[in-house]
Length: 94
Image 1: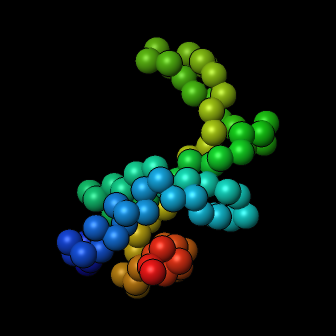
Image 2: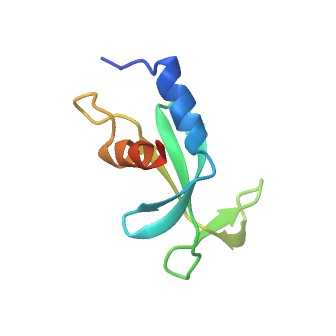
């Protein structure tokens, strides 16, 4: 059963867009909330050879190296808010 994202949570999540956070020891920035996917998209801020990914152009040809992105689910298997996201929301609260 999928948990619906209530409007208050959506507003809180959208307020996080642009915030810098740490995810698995890497500095990242929250760049998007995917309502239909029930996920947040993070972009790594430090592009090194080990974290950069190769981006293809519209024809699938390797084009350039870009910072890695992570798509993390909002909810875990028990339909509880992801603990990382919960801590970021708590840090953002006044």
